[in-house]
Length: 154
Image (cartoon, rainbow, N blue to C red; front, side, top):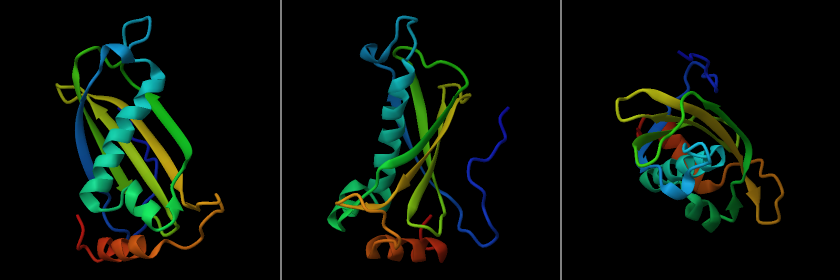
């Protein structure tokens, strides 16, 4: 089984935050081989990422209200087993701690029998509305990170 960590943790870093969603593979997501087309995995990760943003109050809306855009800079995926039509999967988003103004997400997709079928990660940078790199976390996110670091957010 895969054991490589996508993001290194340092002593004192708070535990990663997690959120899970359930998704079924729809007919329109299949490729000619009758499994989910590789490009559609991003929407599964997006569903989990949006759910996490809602759960913790750090979603796209909160960033946009602070004048921040959070585009994906890097996207990596490791396909372990194909996703099949009409089967339900659990998509887990894991947000890792980072001192920098960026979001380090890891994702895992599990089959209904709890087998890991996909691993992935994304790195989202923070930019202003003119797409200039932001070097300081926006105030709302800095306050969130302080609470996270203090163990008040789990």
